[in-house]
Length: 131
Image (cartoon, rainbow, N blue to C red; front, side):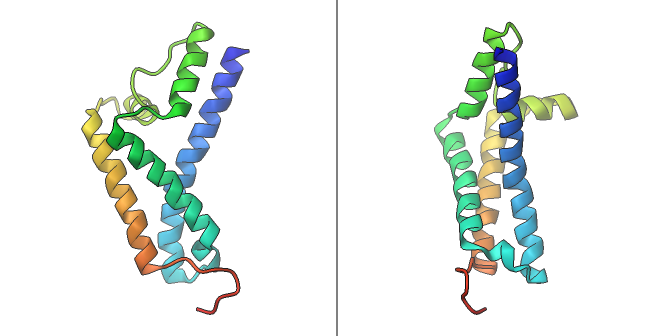
């Protein structure tokens, strides 16, 4: 049962990462293309909160709770957990290179800064507000 719970957390974590990354690309595409939904205030607030949590954890030197829970469940199922963060683990698997932690902190911070810039370039709108 532990491995099924760990796999569920893995899927949730991957969806969280996809939301943050794809969300930014869709906001950037939606701005010039005038996609109204990419300026939805709630979507943008949730997106900003998501990357804000990631940046704060990185600066505080904390591992994501989802990573800790998945690792604990994998260890309980006698499987291997992550040695570092979720992103470090999967990047290492895909590109066979182990970046130092400061690289991830810098990348998350830059990503968060780009999200903030999108708030200036294409500010969110409340529903029913004229553009």
